[in-house]
Length: 116
Length: 115
Image (tube, rainbow over all chains, first blue to last red; front, side, top):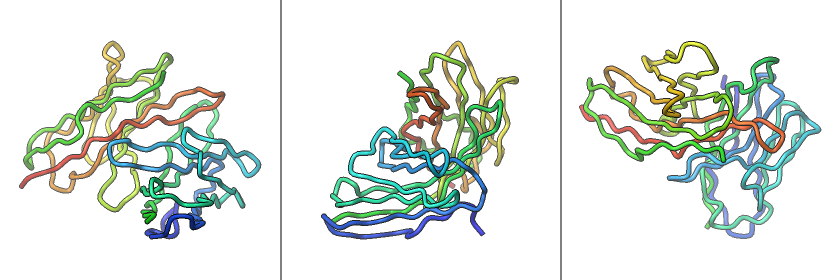
């Protein structure tokens, strides 16, 4: 079984709709991240969480919100979807290790979201 | 400001040819550098990472990368490309700003392999 799973894998929705993307992990990591990928722009950080009570905005958080329901679950919501939120969304996890400031991030398979 | 530049958007090579993907970073402190690969329809997989020590690092799938501080570069290489290497490759730098550590990605290089 995959260590980081994302649901749904593909979603088509209409402008103005509320949508939630879910991420679950079995790696036991404390840190979780949401990124969006757009062609030619690479990956940009939307939100990140270092534990259940810690939520932080990334570089492009406008129009998004998140919920860390448990150590293993981190959801991304679009309260009112708009077409320029059409993108590939990735969830990632990492572990904090003393003495290692930047640990490897493990990525889910992605959710392709289309907003019409 | 922290940034990663991958100057080649798209590279095409023949199977069996050698490969070098370029990556330049801008970061004022000691860089922590990563290369990830994204196969079609897949998430990102770590190929290799550099934290310290030997500047030539070996990764999975026969890839290696060399850290050159004087050139602020971390180029990815493979001596003989296989058709299965066709994918998008991302360079990233671990940076500390806004009171936390973050991973800054380049815009990616898409590799196409011809038989």
